[in-house]
Image 1 (tube, rainbow, N blue to C red):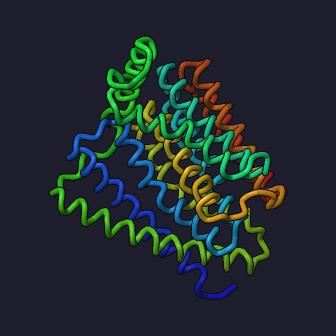
Image 2 (image 1 turned 120 degrees about the horizontal axis):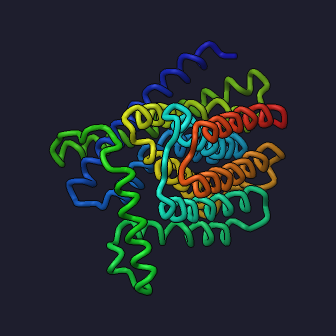
Length: 333
């Protein structure tokens, strides 16, 4: 293995994660300045926080390392569930969710996960899969951005959605770091620079991981699903510890589901259609990773709905499931 691989990988990973954190701060500041609803603000923050894994995924696809890219995407999504919805409740003993929030977030998350698995398994062509993905994602964005009373829906639906949104705001209120006090101009400049740094550092991180993993004889999907996915998603593990410590573990559901949805939309559905990348029939490892992500999403939503939250035992189950995922992915390759 070339001597430069490890130091370049570690340095680029650190820089990418720091820049991603600065991007989240800047976008949160800008969103608040322009009066973005809190649910929409959470979605924007998810896009920023997902910068390293999204860039690594797209870079791998552009470089022809499709299995590595999909490994990053699905591995990150499984890690997010384990870290945020497994580690959080495990540390906090129990995290309670409003059932309406579970239904709203879960419907979108499961729908997008089904579309993602259908794409990677080859069951559905990329264009219909993108349509299916957007059929769940776009209404969620609209609901998050537009007051429920202004939506062209029956009165009963408006009332239900209004209640769900109020409950989600209650769960996520004050769940994040104190608001960065900066001028709008400084926040915008910081966001612009941070985007460029995230992209540049993530490209280097993906390339060095690919070179190092290939030199060690590791399958691409293992390099992406174990190494890159774990490193790029580390902030979510930190977030889980922080939210559990400050008693805001309820925010982990929307954080995890938003992050995973953004990954599939930006790292799979859109690139498969716009870039024409081959994202199906890439081997058992990628299909397994996609299937596990779907199964884990359904499992955690079912647990959260039935138990009106997640207990320490449920958190332990999710952490154990992630360990099983890693072992199986390495074995399948």
